Image 1 (tube, rainbow, N blue to C red):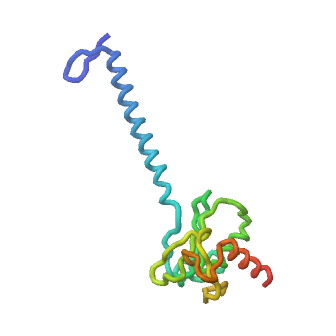
Image 2 (cartoon, helix red, strand yellow):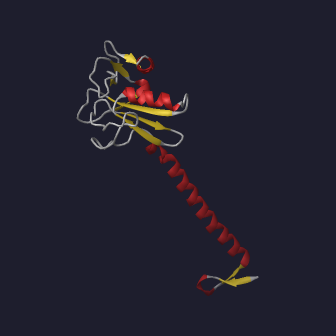
Image 3 (tube, rainbow, N blue to C red):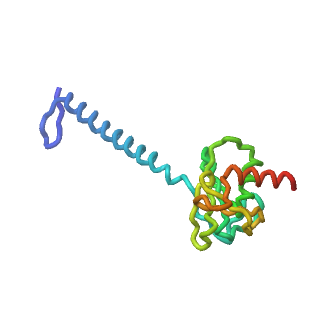
Length: 167
């Protein structure tokens, strides 16, 4: 069997089927490549997001977030929802009250030495120094490296939760 192809030439139907198969294959391949590119760009959905200073409020105490040096963010990795806090203590108490346990989360803290432009640190790898004047008076400021008197994240977390339990 033959059919009228482009340019008015007769071509076998079997060639039309293979040409159609090729076109469908190219569309599917293009779609697959698009999905792969979108999937790989999911890393943009990691990490801290922009805070609207003096407008966004702390998820725990509901005060306006103003102090760039002590801001904290938590991202729920399963829902990709981001929560903002004015103090590490608020973030850790809120997280404890959620009962998430070992649920995958990202916790980001501002380096307290960078008060003009926020430098975000992963809380689990940051160090914390006490005796800071923080928005809610928990007293912990984050730094990126070990400094004299600094403690790790788990120690800071224990101290904050123990202090809150004794209040």
